[in-house]
Structures are given as structure tokens and as C-alpha cells.
Image 1: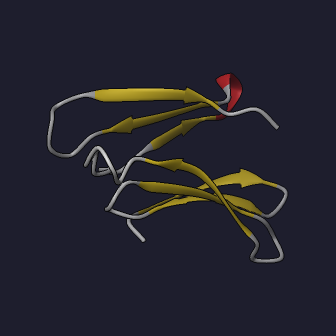
Image 2: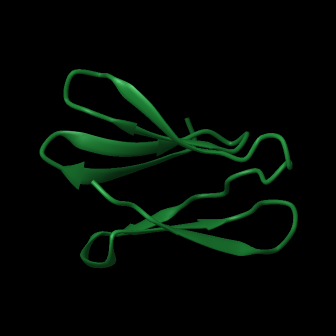
Length: 72
């Protein structure tokens, strides 16, 4: 695990350095939200902006920032 952010209601976002980001619920069930391992977009620490439902991920090796809207 590389990063963690609380979503509320016992839900969290967690990431691993290899490029995967998961949503984890209060029962420990994981849902894969992003798998960027194939293109090698290693995840640096991410940020979640709850009021915009926006996940912002700086990539580790290619100097980019990518953003995703998370919908329930």
C-alpha cells in the first residue's frame, strides 16, 4: 500500500506503488478502480477532492498528473 484517503461511511481509497487504486468498504471488500500497471504509470501519493468527487494521481515516472471523477 502506498496511499490512503477516507471517503466517509467506513470507505477508503488505497493505492499501491505499481499503479492500482482500490475502494475498500467497511467490510474489507476491495473494488479495483484504476489499474495502470500495464502502461507503467506508477502511482505516487494521490489526492481525493470529495466535493468534486475527483481523484488526482501524479504519475511517478513520466511527470504527469491524471484525474478521474469517482461516481457512486
